Length: 382
Ligand SMILES: *Cc1c(COP(=O)(O)O)cnc(C)c1O
Image 1 (cartoon, rainbow, N blue to C red):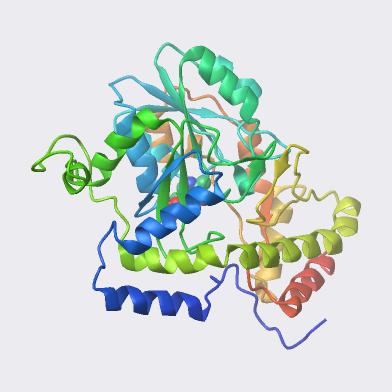
Image 2: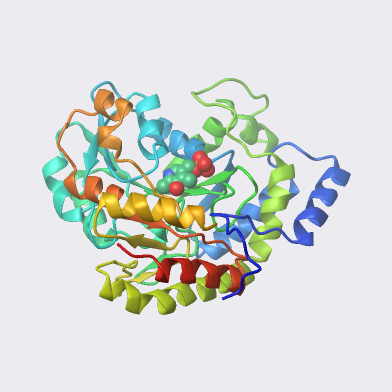
């Protein structure tokens, strides 16, 4: 073990000199607001990454991309959107902000994704959409979700904040639902600080999405010469990412292979070093189903119970390993209780939330840092 490493942070965004070069180029161009050269480049890089059959619009965040999706749904009072209980608040908040109630789906104990077998029972005549989250970028059972959505005429919006580069049966995550959202927050694999994208797989949503992003105006159509002046035509907000930030995003996207390779190596190293300890101590490591290709977004452990979890977090953090817990179930939150019409308890989500630990995991984590984490984990007892 390397004693030179004192503290291992939970996350540290990966930055290279390319990001700075792109930012300099963006500043020199004097094209700083949205829709410029780097926005178009990032959108086309993402589109290519996702297989080319979608449209991509950069947004200020994943939360905002989810809000655009919510506006596209034309939600009416009483409408319901099914979301997992085990997710970040944005997955639910975006739809509540635009008038829906949310119905919480419990999660599967293996992938921690929403349990597709529970969905049909949650559907009512008011259901409009399902928002699966690919937890840790490990895909939900999308065939089951899409079949159900198609038979009940529901829109599927993949919250793919964790899952850029992930796949389900060889299809890129983000291209399976009617719409999908990405995050470029600094905790995600690819980042520009704060940023996001809306992925449009159903072409009929595209033109209105552009308007919603442009503060409810048809400015994009005006620039394309399709209308002779532009004006206020719809709901919307200021959801467009600044070209300055898109420039940074382009540098990250161009380095994506390298970033992903480093993450894969780091993920596999944790798995190999902890596998034996985990199986001897009733600890579960992440489960990746055969049909899923994971993008190495996070590394988590499920320990036996909440007392052990809390004491391990204390112990590891006191030894300089910044391990953390994760989502508190949304059905138990103040807002979740207010805006959900199903007060069903999501017992699996609540159990997982009590037992999960995320280890420090980031693109440039060094071997010495990982060895420090591994040795602190292996020496812990309960
Ligand atoms: C990070 C995250 C978000 C929010 O992303 P922002 O870009 O910060 O708005 C939404 N959903 C999930 C599942 C996330 O992990």
